[in-house]
Structures are given as C-alpha cells and as structure tokens.
Image (cartoon, rainbow, N blue to C red; front, side, top):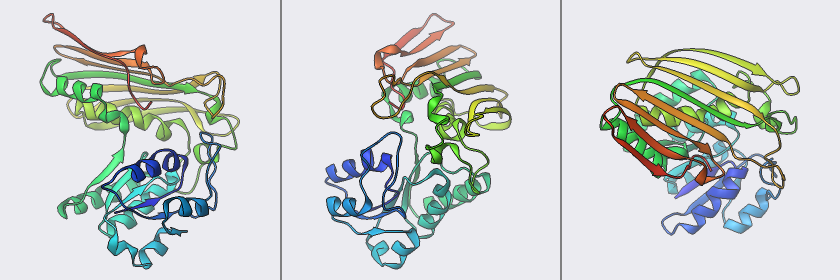
Length: 311
C-alpha cells in the first residue's frame, strides 16, 4: 500500500502505470501541490484531478495533509518523485511516519539534509523498514556483473576510476526548465552536478565499494540560466584510490519530447585495479553501442554484451 509524493513526469510516465500493473500493490493516495505539473520530457502531463479519476485515489496538496487524513494507517510505504529540492523534507516526514521509502535521485540537494536522511534511514532499518534511492542503472545485468567481478577480486585492489557523462547543452540552458536550472533555498546551485552526475557516482560506488574521503570540485555555469553545465571532481578514497569524474552538458541538439535531434547520454566508466581493468561505456539510447569488458594481466578477458544505463 503506497502513497505517491509528486505527480511528476517520472511519476506519470513510470511509477503510476507500473503500480497499476502490479497486482501486489495498492495505490493509497497521490500528493502534489500543483494542479498541473510541467515537464520538458512529457508534453502530455495530466492534471492531478484527472489522475485522481484515472487511479481512483484521493489527491492531497501536501504530505502533512495526507498524514492528518488517517490514510497513513493504511499505508506501508512512500514513493517520493517530487521536485528535487523537496526530497529531503518529504523523506524525513515519511521516515517519521515509519514508512518504507523509495526515493527518486538525487536523495537531496543539501548536505545537512543528507546527513539527517542517513540517520533516519538507520532508524528505519532498525524497524525493519527499507530506504532506497532509485539509481536504476545499478540494477542492470551488466552493473551487477561488474560488481561481481570486483568483489571476486578479478581486477584486484581498485586503484583508480575515471568516469563521465555527456548530454545535450540545451536542456540546461532553457529557462523554462526551471526545476533543473534554478537555485532554491535548499540547494547551492542547480544543473548537471546533482541532477545527472549522481547517476554516474552511484554506479561507481556500487560497483567498486569505494568510500570517498575528500573531494576537489570545479564547475562552469551557463551564462543563460546559471546552471552548472561542466563539472569536474577529483575524489580521494579511503583505500588510497582516486576517482576523476566529469559531467559535460556539451552535445548539440535537444532532448525534449518530439525533438528530431534527440540523443542519448554518452557515458564512460573505467575502473583500474592491481590485476586488471573493467570498462563499461556507450550511448544509453543505443544498447548495441557498448558492452561490459574485463581485461586482466593474467590473460583473462571476458565481456557482457550491450550497454544499459539509465536508458
């Protein structure tokens, strides 16, 4: 029994249809303060009133109103797919209500909120509850196989990682794409770093098991919107390994619905260890563009076909 917080494009395009298809799930309510939400990805966003009729559930304007309604007693978990900067506050309210939480990325846009959510997740775990962040690239066959190679010691001790994601510039230079390019009180800046680079870093940390110790960052921001469009980070890890990570909004063309020039994101992940290396790169709109490869100094070579990331 699930409450959906945020009637966003991701919610309307993925979560709501999948919840309805799943015979083990009951949608209890939808929470969203806007009568109609806007998306650069989806030009056919439904008003919340129409969603209520489609899914036969009540709609609440804020989560506190839902909690006061008494429906929380008949709810097991919350899916949080609202505006990025609201993830933290909604997550903390859901944790206080002792609900399972499935949260869209980024978990938060604020370091203090991140620490509070981390503490709340530990309390939920002690109650047998789950707190998950939806980094879907981490659950592909190739990602799980990559983690298996690393855990089995196939490439030895991890010494260095290099990774990047490249996508179109236009997405971050459209002022109407406000929720992706405008700052708010809950965030420092807005743009590629926490909107997209979180995908790449989540994959790297899951596969390698590395833990960051310190980081040096540099960003270049758009003159049109102020959003960061080029980001670089050098991360020092607790085992002595280093990670170089880049986010690059430099491709031409658009990625909105109906764009004739729509392209996938170009992604590269390369992991180097004492016994070999692991490569996983490609265009996430074209599975045949890449594969998972392991190349070892003892002559062991193996590959898993196709590239599936966030596509």
